[in-house]
Length: 559
Image 1 (spheres, rainbow, N blue to C red):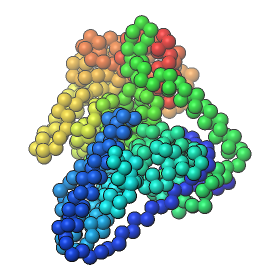
Image 2: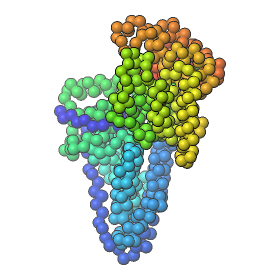
Image 3: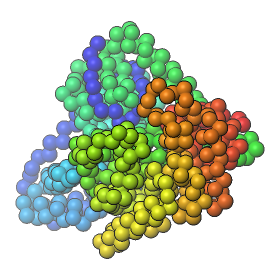
Image 4: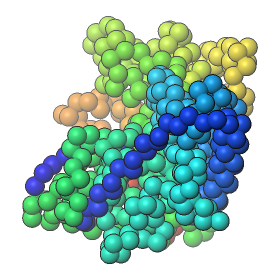
């Protein structure tokens, strides 16, 4: 057995025979031409054909996966129609008197290098996109066929390898695809009935290829690098799309374990098929919004895979915890924007920085505290160090132009804290307006209810915000005076305590008195023994781990 570690880009388990796709040779001969205008005309005609093909591919993807996922190919069409791109190609033809194929290849390399050099990982991933669309134009110029073209005029790389809509050409079996890399357009054409999973030597979690793999429900791993070996063709492999592990020629123990895990996953998938798209609604018609909690942008894939209606808690502090220096505005904008785009119209509620207590970061240089749970943390850091807070707020506002983002403030104990936070938010808005940067002017603001103080002043808080979300982990800690990090207090820290449940009831009632919604984003939301209680109290939303979504929906629908 050979074990390879890659980067997970789409969760799931696949067990099957490997099919290695040969790398496509994009060597283009450089030829000197006598008639630059004729060569420019060839380029323009090929570009127009490629744009028409992308329109057809876009329509195919929209029909199967929805309009949101089809937008990728609208972006590809815009790339081809970009005046700078055309000017670069035609400039090379005119100045160097080279053939259109060579000019397109050279322009693609220039634009890809420009994208790859950018700080934003999202923009870096666009390097693969510009290469993809340019290869499509080169295919047209070279007279290759493409299965997406209505006139059958051009053929893409995946079609050449026989893995698209007509299945795998050699024997019709399903395979795990190993490849150096896959272009987004090829991935979109994969026949899901014939492809079990994907493993590539190159690529990234932010690439459109990765996003499409997640949309298609294909386990996928990228970045195996030099471990990619064409000699693996025909061998049995197991891929774990959650951990990023690949096992070639697995031993019996590994096979047995992954067959067991796959059976469990298929049982979960059966529940998904039964409940996907169904409203989270009781038999009496009481509607509850069912969202999921995440810590990283890559977690959005699990939210969609488990059919959550949105993200009720994006723990933004992990963008700080997993770095050795301050995350820049651009870095944060990239992360929030990626999630917003991937979620489409579904709500994405992002909790502002919640550092302190059990989450310490060296570069914050926080002083030692004897009781950090009651100390300098969360909103207290943000309000006393507004230069840190405003960077995050600007990134959140900018990302709000790309999806349905809401901002949630943690560890609130007073109305003044909310007003101070809103003042800094207004400053950030004013700056962005002055810079002519788009954002959602009516972005929603909410607070986490996780202290007894916030429950007591919930009526006043409700007049300042658009929603409440109850953080039951800290609410339990502060209500019962039990440090959640102290294992010896476990028997006393009962989240089912009548005191905690009364706090939840008071919060819901205050929210409803003022016409705002109230949810729960703590672990208690997934406690099926309390679902009946929460429904009786009139909870509007529950946000839980992605894997808890379907079991919870099942319980609510049977209530």
